[in-house]
Length: 101
Image (cartoon, rainbow, N blue to C red; front, top):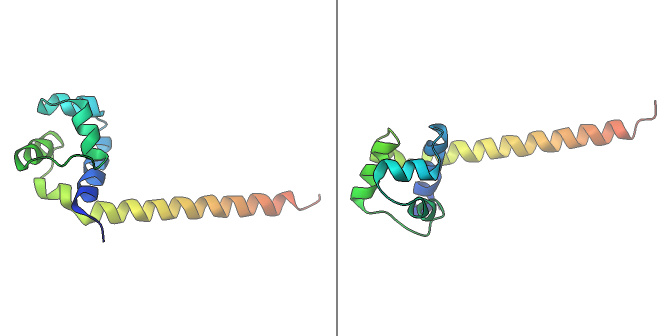
């Protein structure tokens, strides 16, 4: 089971990156420090309801979107796909290196 801090951290970071915002830029938009944004994304700090609303506004999404499991599932699927592609690539490379031409 995934905890609420993890869901918020993953979704917030994914949305921030999607918008091509640095932690500093996001912090500036909502009047806080980059260190605070970093702590939320590292699951060391949990924001107040007011701050969640400010984050959602700065990230151009609804507050509830920051707690959606869909992004978590998508990120996990992408990680699995990337891992499989790497493994396939390595197997092919290994197979070809053992063939004598």
